[in-house]
Amino acid sequence: MKEYMSNFNEEKLKEAFKIRDAYIKGEISLDFANAQMKAHIGRLTPAELAYMEQHFQEKVEDECISEKIDEMLAIYDGVIIEEQKFSDLLNGHPIKNYVDENIAIRDVIKELDSLLTKKYIKNQWDEAFEKLNQFKIHLSRKQNQLYTLLEKKGFDRPTETMWLYDNEIRDKITSITEMSKDDNGRQDIKEHFDSFKELILDLMEKEETILYPTSLELINDDEFREMISGDKEIGYCLISPKDDYENSFTQLHREEQKLNKNGFSGFKDELSQLLSKYGVQGGWTEDTPMNVKQGILSLNQINLMFQHLPVDISYVDENELVAFYSDTKHRVFPRSKGVIGRDVKNCHPKNSVKTVEEIIEKFRSGEQDKVEFWINKPEVFIYILYLAVRDENGHFKGVMEMMQDCTHIRSLQGSQTLLDWDTENKKENANDSDTIASDNQVENTEKITLLKPDMKIAPILDAYPTLKDYMIAKSDKFKMMNSPMFKFVRKTATVDDVSKRTGFSLDVLQREFTKFLEELRDNQKNV
Image 1 (cartoon, rainbow, N blue to C red):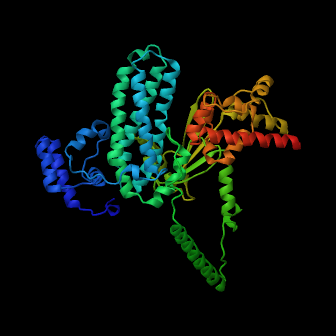
Image 2: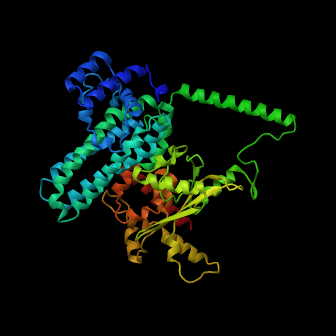
């Protein structure tokens, strides 16, 4: 961690921690501790505080929840340096996106604070709590993207402690939302909300005081830009980030990349010529045939096979690092590139880590070879299988996870042994819709030309079965519509929900919908 920090002085940090520790133990007063900090330490950056927490402080699982930010910072009053302001960051910078989401959620907290003191109005409450639930996207992106990069920098304290706090907030959002829908629950909701409000405001202040400034010091621009694609895939909370930061590569940077690429290509050509001179086949490409266990395949063919598998595959190697996941269109749960190379234990909340460790331990010892789980909901059935991977000598080489949406398979009855394309097409259409709309419904919904924020998307997709593929082809942000989990929200999701989830404004969605209708009419004329 320290190799990524500027002007690092470990002795100063040890001295600062001694003062802090003496105050925590009650050996000195707050005023004396703060005076000692100012006299002997002078200035500390948020990253230096993070280093002290990482290397000197004993880990306690719930420390992030139990230690309030205002109490923690009192000892450092006048000592912490306020570094780069978040407002100075370009729009679309991953850290600015997190901060902007916090600003949006604080507005939602204020809105709910006001609503909960007034007479219950269903639509207003539902809308406000729906916005509050968007914060779960913020937490998911932080856990899967930001924490992953910080781990690679040697700062895994957020994964160890803040993850639990994140999950505590997520669970409370769910429980309070359920209370808002229950007549009896609404009677006590204000008291529960006030307790929750204290926690979520504390979490956001910890993010902005320590986590985000430390991230800005440890993570460089190239790494932040690499994060963006994964961030977009997971989505954003109540904001639609602009692309200013993503588009901020200078011409010089592009030229450097071009030079590096050309330099590597030249070396590759020279190496290929040298190998050919001595009879070694050179000129390898992704289409070059390779001998595999049972056949001959190119790298491109292997990748295509993984992308078209009807199941999701993930692989954790013998060192317990995530090495691979298949990028299928129908992926059950979201994944991002940041997970590659991550310790598998850090991909799970603390309350699940013991289960993960037990599975790996029993697989590694040879005591077990597989374990299965399943999720059984009215709309979907998800099957999950973990298999021990061993070489020909029986040596443990890792764990493979297979995940499949078995909803359609479980619905099959009788036998089908003859080819029937009509039946296959009906299956495909059935997968795109939870219910088959009547002729009248289709006839009515096909007249829709104007999208409205509160309009449900289910009847639109029922009327235009090809609309989903059209939108996915336009942007990867719509890939989640191929996920089995989309069936959970399909009936209730609105156009406004789609706008928030993808980051596209209503105007952009309307423009693309109009283009789709025009293409549809043109195709019908040509038939």
